[in-house]
Amino acid sequence: MIFLLKLIRRIITFILLLAIVIPGYFAYSIWNTGHNATPLKSDAIVILGAAQYNGVPTDVLQARIDRAAQVYRQGYAPRIVTVGGNAKGDNFTEASTSKRSLIQMGIPKRAITAIPQGRDTLSSTLAYVSYLRSHSLHSIIIVTDPYHCYRATAQAKDLGITTSCAATATGPASLAKSGWRYIVRETGAYLAYKSVGQFGIHLTDQIKK
Image 1 (cartoon, rainbow, N blue to C red):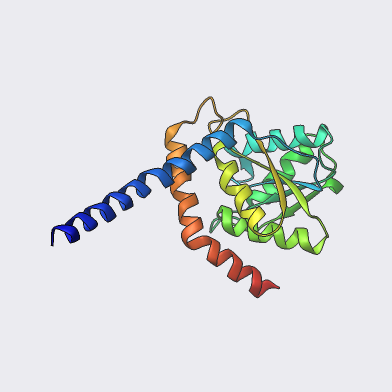
Image 2: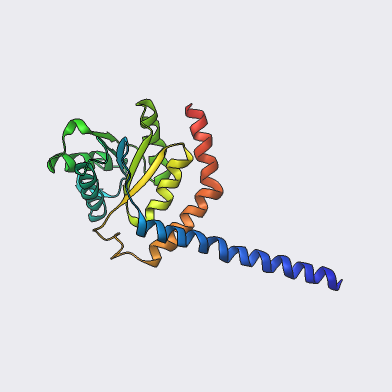
């Protein structure tokens, strides 16, 4: 009986330890990636969507657009893919808003493709990966918030896309203005993806094939 109680205590202690260590490891990975994200020369730049209001980007989305334009002008990739759908009643999608803003900034229209799909990271990833495959594109630079880089790149890599990240340096989601709350949120989102979403992403991918 005493042995059984000790065994139960050890099992509970081990489970509690895992509950602390695993989230802690991924929280550090999210922080580290956000601080060290470096774009690599690729086939395309992908701007992940964020909120827009009647065709006007929010500060978060504008920061991503600005960063993508910078990376494009630095010659890291010859094209930009914008992604993101719209909420019910919206006249514009996140993708079209990003494209319009890029054109206004002087990026050639021919170098931009808008994919008006996706209301979250996972659905957006499935949408742009489908486009990439159909156009024989294999490597991308994802432009998003620093602490979003880890999850966003993981989902693309899980679908066989070579991926690096160019994190935003301005806006409310930049390193200077975001902090531990964003990391906590991303840690929870990443763990949810690895426990449930990853199965769904592979299942959906197989269905599309």
